[in-house]
Length: 595
Image (cartoon, rainbow, N blue to C red; front, side):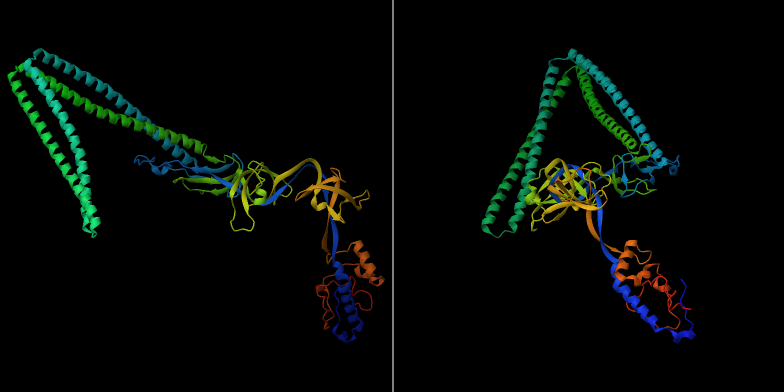
């Protein structure tokens, strides 16, 4: 637009009418135009009449929760790597190393999605270590079994040899025995009986010793307690117990003395028998004595040898069982390793949302821990509080309908999985109980913490016509909806209603499935300050201002910043004119043109 410039020499020639014209224009703008810039108009949103199952019930607001599952690393690789001077340990991987991570916290995953990859070097290295351990344990088991089987054979051979020797000695002895030999045998049996008696007496000694120690302890404790008691009655009671303990102690000592005497007596008898045997042997022929000596030696040595061999057999059996267990553990470790690492990648076993990644790229899996955590779709639940008046109508297993705030146009199905029997708060004005609901179907779009309206179904109709409650209008006790006639004009139609819930209302008469209705609402609309006005706006403004303002809206008006007053003109625009758009063509034609 051409700038209006007034030369300084014409400063005193400014017409007074110019100022008056500007003031009138500003007043007209504020009084006529500004009110018309902010207007209200009706907006009609198209909706379709639907048919289907209609549900009415108790609606409560709840929050989506989820249970976290995890994929863990629990392989125990400690002790597999051993120092080997002939190998370069730096070239062998002792633990799995993370090469790359293909998922992040908050990411939705599907079954089979790649989560994490290990370096091939670490996978091969750890596999080699485990396989080496399996081979070593297999060799150890074979060696242990061989030693055990060989010991069985040797023990059996030793037993047969000793048996033959004993039988030979016995036969030789039988051929040379005399009456003296039979007497010696009888005395030996007495000696054996005395030894058995000694064993029994030793056992009794241990029993009495235990009694003596316990009574001695009780005796000393009572003695110490009596030192600090000043009450005569209490002292008398303890003194009686003290005397009883002392008597028991003395009885134990006496019993031990008797047992000791019995043992000494037994040994004396044994000594007597042995002296008699010695004398008898002296009287027996040399052959008889040699035969008995040979027989007894073979028996004693055989029993001792078998006892030693049995101890060795038990040790070998334990070694074999230990080797077997070690082999089973290493084989299970290899099986678990292959199941865990597979091709060197960790995949999602089911769909869900990642909640935690336990390791970073380049990190070694030295400690057991969580690879990643996730929430599975089937673990998504909604927790709602239901008042005591409504809770009595609900049961576990009841079906519910769910509408999430983030997805108003989609209805999810759910099932009541638990109802608590304890109120959520003892001090609340309204007593309510927590109800847990399992969300069914595809939950891939849901996130933990989302809010939802849960409808517990109390009544249900099938195959009914219904509309959104936003499209239903009420006036003077009648219900109606907005529609369009064949000319596209908005008209009304009366309808009859039935059941209703928080979102929909049943239409029993007046509408058919598939018909188009309109939800009406008023909105404030502010007209743009620049650009051409619509024809309807022009007509409205023209009607309000008359012909004298006809040219006022004919063209685009520049922003006030582009309008320049004459140089040296000290003029402040009237209040309200800051930022206004002067009429199109202002400064061209008329009495003032800036020339």
